[in-house]
Image (tube, rainbow, N blue to C red):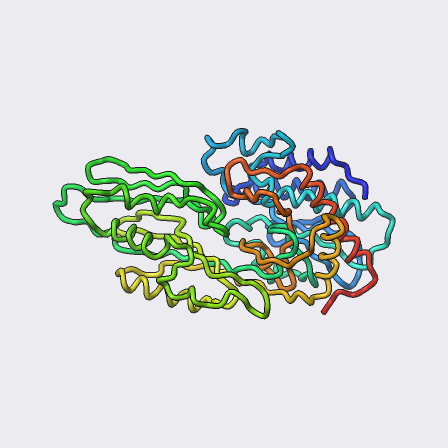
Length: 434
């Protein structure tokens, strides 16, 4: 494999420099066009589909399609004052490449592109089509994949480089729930909360929470923002607030804070009654369902609480909805909104996983164990997709954090692994359909 390291770095820097936050559709489109242009320059077949929400980059040919799913949209920068370099002006420093999206998912996207380019140049014939499917709304509501899966052909199998190595054949489901409660005030109380705000997104542990008091003061707490797939790595600013409200008259706002703290300060929420479920299914580790309060907003006479749920494979959406309905009944509220993505379970005996396992072990020397994915990757978008990197053993997972980065050596190793996977599957005559 011939790797153009300097070009790969330039390509990634150019992509990170585009501030493609999911809500900024113009910037996201610019990022997608940038990636498609890179593919065209490498001689690949490129087009935009799904009303311009998805990019398709293909090489090879054959009856089977090996799919690779990535995305170019990113979350916001968080607290920019904590960044050592601008989040959307990529910087190479101390052997790392810094910038929002470096690890999620712009770095892996560029690594895959260069792996595809190397496969085109190795002189071996293709027996399958390799299709890179580039999305633009992974960090929000997945309108891109909804459109794609309804109107376009799906790959036979594949991976998304949006998790941990070795192979994430099991992945938790994701649910975002909005609960609404009356923000009742107490007449003539000398001091009470009259407004609450916290968080910025459903998939980020909130690093800020503010309470507006009736005397005009604002109490602010600060935490540590991390991805909600592993909330224990951060510090939820919401949980810090109740301890700072001594002397404040209880009302609807304080009741919401107490409820959130009582039920969710332990992320497995044992008081909701789902923690007793088994952590294994069919011999695979599926972990427990995890709950994270992420948003609090005041809207008129109501306060809304956003809860992000990462639910284990055997937990159903109906069970979760029943739990939230009971909680709302107890506190006089209602479930105001809910979106959900399913859990993933791909049997370890699926044929193409043998190739992914072998290529990972050959490239790294590490055992190719199958692991549980805690995030919400595009593996949920279509059947037969697993997560496969980019996080290597011992590597910091800093996606959604300030000072997000990818080590340059890891970027190169990702490219090598993905090249070997493309070579072992798409340039092999054997069928990998089940």
